[in-house]
Amino acid sequence: MELTAVAVSQSPEEKFREFLSSRPRPQRYTDQQRDMVRYIFSKHNHFDADTLCEEMRQKGLNVSRATVYRTLTKLVDAGLLRCLETGPKKKYEHDYGYPQHEHLQCQLCGKMIEFQNPAIESVIRDVCRTHNFHMNGHTFVIRGTCSECNRSRVTKRRLDLI
Amino acid sequence: MELTAVAVSQSPEEKFREFLSSRPRPQRYTDQQRDMVRYIFSKHNHFDADTLCEEMRQKGLNVSRATVYRTLTKLVDAGLLRCLETGPKKKYEHDYGYPQHEHLQCQLCGKMIEFQNPAIESVIRDVCRTHNFHMNGHTFVIRGTCSECNRSRVTKRRLDLI
DNA sequence: ATTCTTGCAAAGCCTTTGCAACTGC
DNA sequence: GCAGTTGCAAAGGCTTTGCAAGAAT
Image 1 (cartoon, chains in turn red, green, yellow, brown):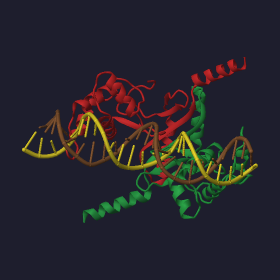
Image 2 (cartoon, rainbow over the protein chains, first blue to last red):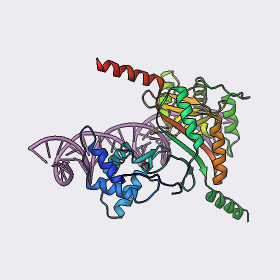
Image 3 (spheres, rainbow over the protein chains, first blue to last red):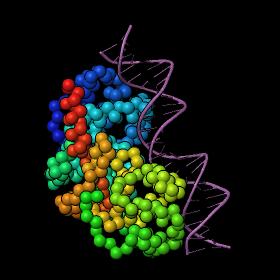
Image 4 (cartoon, rainbow over the protein chains, first blue to last red):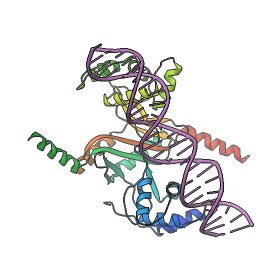
């Protein structure tokens, strides 16, 4: 929401169709998958499988939980989404058309704050070279409390003293 | 295993006892907890709850799964262990007497390679200051394939060509 | 027509929890 | 003896999967 998008030549939907048709055994593009891609890329946020499923159903888009899970996996493979494994439930976010970034995660309100930092990318390159490690991806999450939650905790503490 | 330990004045066991007795309501130090602390600090590695439980039982140390889970939580609270949430199962590692570091995780053999990098700590400080964020902890894991696994994959590929 | 996808419900995996028996202090 | 701990088994939360019915190519 705060970082600027990267220019891409294809729409997420087109990119996904291309991915599906280029598989060893071509896979099918279904109504449910189309609805998911469109819904997910209609807004920029972090979400988990279950919440997505719930939200889509409330908008009248019918997808089963199983299909949501299965399709999210494909969207990650296709490079459209990134998966953050931070805690019990997997979180997803846009990858296609969005720059690499890291996260501050508020443990009180759940908010994910994104930030970019060139130093991190160079650290990653260095470390991988040093260890002859072939990187597939990375997760960098700083956990704590965001400014708003800090503020309300202080306020609350003040009130408690009265 | 590769980083050098930090000098500490108390043994992990002492530090844990101190933590337990300093709680609002003092907690008890049981045989099971003692066995766990000793076993965990007898070797330096990354482990998950279930594996630990299994290993201890094989050494004749009797602890139930429930106790292992409950005690691991306390050990994290006490600052003896750190918990890495990277994937479906929580991984634990020494915190007390061990320097801050980050991880390369091999997705083929499961190995965790530790590395230290001062740039990362300064990035964390900067970002937290900028966002007025109060940090509690962080996770930085680079996923991919380690040098050994890369080598054997290449070898295997060569053999496949024959 | 063939083969992949869906939806359901069941199973799986990891972790937490209620409760009675037990134990450290 | 009181209050915290253990072990068991059951429940919980999230995700995956077997299968029959349905849909894409």
